[in-house]
Length: 107
Image 1 (spheres, one colour):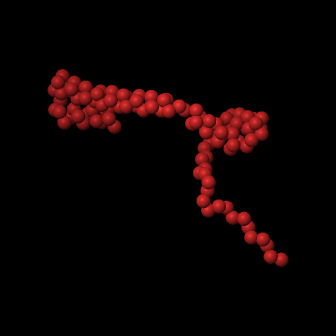
Image 2 (cartoon, rainbow, N blue to C red):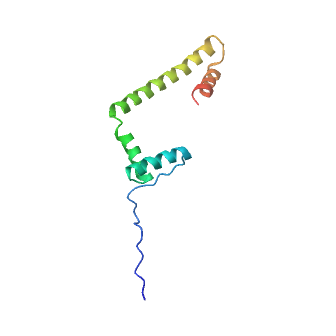
Image 3 (cartoon, one colour):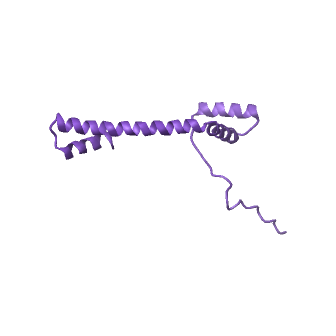
């Protein structure tokens, strides 16, 4: 007797898989919450992640971008100040002072 053809998985997945390790305590909490909500562990984790990212207002993202830009500017200014101190007070050659600043602050 001829066997029916096996169902094959789609060649094009509708989503990507994310996997991570978690401590036993966290898995216990996840499993308890999933059971209470009558969903699988994966469904619960997917919902938690989606909710987290969907709840991030654009204003927070903009504020973080501005904060990162200011932090970057402060970092560059620290390097400039170090070069100035090394050359003016420490009497280091300019190129040596720049290299010290690059190695200690900008790498």
